[in-house]
Length: 181
Image (tube, rainbow, N blue to C red; front, side):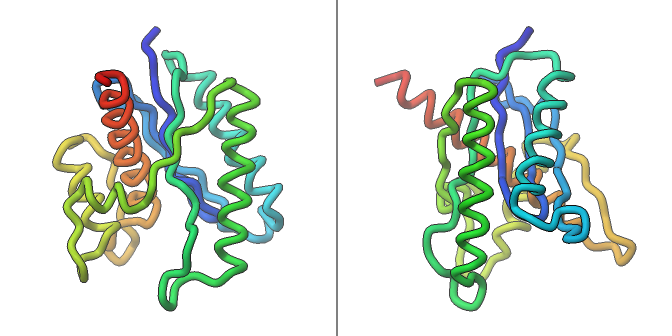
């Protein structure tokens, strides 16, 4: 069995996840859709669904989870994009999910700053960060599963899945640097 890293872009509506080996090869990528407010009316419902799917995927994958990388929750307001209630909701879902993963695997998730993803993909102001990350991942992982909306646009979940892979690559690079010290 191969050692794998669980890489996460946790969100209240669509959580991207991937399993990478130590060389950065992706063994599985997916997303967990929790945007349906009738089905997922509370943060607890969202957290339960995220953990249920992740635990199921781990039990089905041929490998051992030896590390977890997760994008850190928002810590400041983005002009016109984040309210205090949104940041509080995302932070609580992020923390509770990582806590449940700790309880299950005994592993503390390494938090990756969103700015690290921007740096990795070479993001410049006025570029679309999500699109830039997706292009970066596709260039390095040609088998990345792209889905389109009925209007021909990239499906939103693809961006979250690409983010999880980029987060994983940053986490692996960080670990290699720490080991070489």
